[in-house]
Structures are given as structure tokens and as C-alpha cells.
Length: 206
Length: 206
DNA sequence: ATTTACGGAATGAATATTCATTACCGATTC
DNA sequence: GAATCGGTAATGAATATTCATTCCGTAAAT
Image (tube, rainbow over all chains, first blue to last red):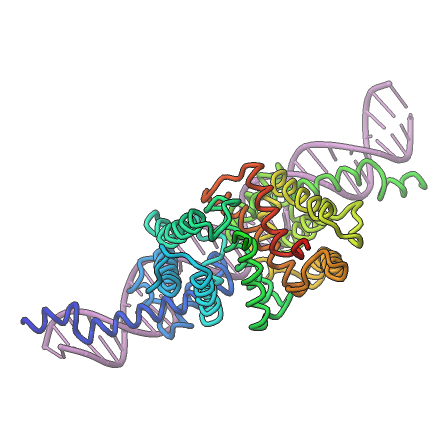
């Protein structure tokens, strides 16, 4: 009885279910990124995940719930990969380069996740809880910029929110251009783009 | 007979039809921008345009055709407003400022059009012809950057396509942030953002 | 043996598109 | 100038399709 009770939350059964959940979310991310949220029927998601439609609905109450789960999962992964083990309260050029490199790695290794997060039409679907998850990434970055500006490392020309929007937009823009085949990005291009972004935000050296 | 024949293509009848076409496209832009392409049923578009659904289908073969028409129309308007009466082959800081000012004006006066053009999920719908219209804007801008780099006005750090993608992305990013209420953009903010973008692309003064 | 998970056909609601009908407009006739 | 007519435009209810969700027979697990 004790073991049975334990297995409800920690046994191999639970582990397998948890894995299948992830599997469905992963599949959803891919198909959503390709066809948009309204644009993808549920059955293709199930197929991509290798499960029946009925099974999908065992794990998620509705398409909307799945969208929110996928969104939170993706945002969380981006946040983890960007911020983990980083001391944002000590800004430096090296920290900026690290953040840039991590962004690149994320966009390269999980292109669909990146694209999914940049899609427009989330916001009509998202629960307040999902929406607030956005802040978990933006607030630390904002603090970093504020401190950088106090330090004199970054120019205070741009208010922090604006600097972040500009930087983020530029990054998204170059990857969007690559996805649409308007250009190809070499490693060298990415370094040059990074330096250009830095020039836009930094204080000129004395 | 001659008069009758003429009125077929040039009379008040034709003019009214042409106006109604525009009216429907305008309405489509607005509703699409708000709810996404897959997300908006056809009847609401007709309602917004003040016509019956059947009428809409008299003017456009399908929802897809309407999307393409709206896209071409929007791209054309953006292009006209950005490039008309401008000598892109003589780049200068003043020309850059003019382009920036025109972009602002467009984004401010036709926010739905701007948002519609930046939506992700066009590309699965667009005909090759619609798609090629993209080039009509990108190629002149590319030429301008090339000449600016030859001049020494712009840094040749970034290859032209990359410079444009970066700049465009930054611009889209700050307006997206404003739309999502992450920040508010004052006129002063916009000037500062402009200068930051210039720093990213220009050659430093000697 | 019983419970739980699975799959995918079945269901009903939502949506794109069509079509039979009506309203309108300009031309022609008296 | 008024009345009639032919044809085109407009309409929205009806149809066909697509989609989210459910349900039940089967398989797996315990």
C-alpha cells in the first residue's frame, strides 16, 4: 500500500506519463511554429507526438490548455538557458557576449521553440499566469541594464525597457530574415551583429 | 453603344466597385491584424466592411485570395510611403532620418497595417507573386546600404542584408513592445532609438 | 480480474463557400 | 419626363467542409 501510494507520484508510471507529456508539448511546439496556433488542428499534433488524439486529451484539457503549457514550457527553457548561473547584477562586456552566445545557441538548437515564442497570436490565448511568466525574463534583464547604465558601461541614452526592446527586436529580426531566406548567417556575421548591437547600447570608450 | 462600352470600365459603376474593393481590403487588414489570419472567420470581415458575405466573395475568389490582395495592398502602401520622392542612391544621415521619420509615421497612422505586415503566418498563404513584392522594398534599401558603405558613410562591418535585417528588426521590436504594453514611446524615445540604430550601422566619425 | 491508458472513429459546433433570390442602376421607349 | 426593361450587384440562408472534443472498444499494467 505504501509502495502503491508512492508510485502514484514518483513511480515509473508517473515518470512515463511525465515523459509523454513532454513529448506532446514538444510536438505541439513544432507544429504550432510551422502552421500557427489557429492554423494547426489537434490531430496533427497527436500524430507528430506519436499518440492518439484521445490520449492527447487525457494529458491536456483542451487545445487552449496545451497552448498555455507549451508556452510556459518554452519560456521556461529559454529563461533557464539564458540566465542560469549568470550574475546579471555585475554587467560587463563579457556578460553581454555570454548572453548573446546563449541566445544564438538557443535559436540554433531549438529554432521552432524560438519561433513559437515570437509568434504574435499567443496573447489572446494565454492565461494571466502564462502571461506573467514573460516578466520572469524581462525583469532581470531590465535590472542588468539599469545597473550597467549606473556603472557607465551602458549609455543612458535609451531607457532600459527601450534598450531591451531594441536589442531583442534586432536579434529576432536577423533570425527571422534567415528563416525567410533573405540571408544566411555565418558565425562571423553573428559576431559582427553582436558588436553592432553593443555599439547601439554601450557608452563610447573615452 | 460606344458610351455603354466605355462605362463598363471607366464609368461611375466601375469606380464604385473599385472603392468597395478597397473597403473590403481595409476591413480585412483591421480584423486580420486583431485576430490573426486563421483566427478570423470571413463573416466578421464582411461585417466590418459593411457588406454581405456573398458580396465579399464577388470581389475575391476565396479567403486566401483576399489575404494575398490585402498583403500586396499593404506592402505597396508601405513602399510608397517610405520610398516616394527619395533618392536612395545618395545616402546621408539626413536620408536615414527621413526614412526613420516615415517609418514612424506609417506605424503611427496605420498601426494595423504595420502589424499585419509583420505577422508570421502569411507565408504559407502567399502566392509567389505576393512574395516577390517583398523584394520591391528590400532591394532599393539594399542598394542604399551598399552605396553608403562604399562612401564610407556606413560601416562595412555588416553585410547589407544583415544591416537591414538588424535595423528593421529593431524598429519592429520597439513597436511590438509598445503594442504589448511593455513600454510607452515618447517622441524623444523615438529619436534616441533612431540615433542608437544609426550608431549600430554608421562609421564612427574620425 | 480489475483498473487504467490508449487510439481513433464518431459527434456536433464552427467555418468557408455557394446559390437562389432581391434590389439596384442605367438605358430605352413612349 | 415617366415608365419599363435587361442585366449586374448584393444578399444571407443553405451546403459542404473542417475542426475540437468525446466515447467506447481494446490493450496494457498491476
